[in-house]
Length: 417
Image 1 (spheres, one colour):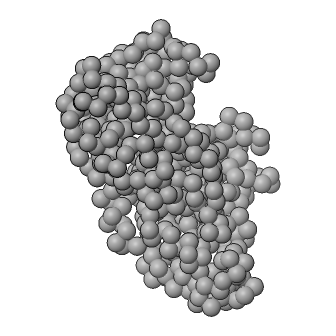
Image 2 (tube, rainbow, N blue to C red; image 1 turned 180 degrees about the vertical axis):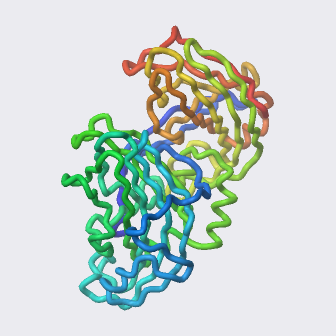
């Protein structure tokens, strides 16, 4: 594909998954991870009220009303509304710098001028997605945020970026500061509404139909133009492209947003879940609360089968544990190097957490802050069916030097099975 960008092409080994299966000796599997993939801080899509629209902002569109008339004016083609989502509920709060997608619309464009064919891989037919974006700088100081921080995610390594040339966005509808002159800089307290667009070929739009596409609002807001200390973590949402897919996405939203879900690595089927466990234990200066667990059977998507080849052909089960962390210590915690494991049937074997399929952001938890960690443990389905008891041993935390913190302390939780 033209704009389907490869983030990383080398699959490297993540964390080894070791377990001792009944009668089979030591069984070892591994999931490969794409270390070049963007950092994700994922959250499920939810219906929320859109931000109020000031009178001077782009007009709202109805189901059949074209949200962005400039598409027809610029393309000289016929524009047909494919799908309008008037309340997507896509929001990303970067410590007071807020992005809200108030509405988006997909249109099909046919018979466009050949002068406009370049963004469509030299085709005169294609699709345009227009997102109506509300931006609010509530940080109390001027902030920088690049205009290339929106994308449509197809798979864990393929995505379509927003059109940086703003081909179909009028100057008055662009997200540009009214008080700052520097590019991508926004004044303290400033509120803006404008359009962001994506151009897709027919082939790219067909690719969206074959997966569970995502709309990603990246992090990156910073108070300096070098983006030092910028906000880490993206917000990922189900990108609905039609009514049938909307129903599918709503049914799928029940799953915890690990990378198996957010990066379209695998399809999930619920085996068992238990919410509201809310068991808390103290790990030195950190309160660790297991909030819930989900056991799912996963089927790797075609582009990701190679990652899971070491788990054999008899199916794979993912155990995702939702954990709340309250860092009451004086140390910054690294969340991507916690050495947790699940002990099986007391002394039957251990399964190590798989960092390659866990959300990679936020990667740190500052002293005094609270946050969430999703731990994922993978195992062969035929072995899982023989297991009776799971015990999570959470920890130890590791520092930036790779050494264990808090005297290698861990805490243990008996997980429902």
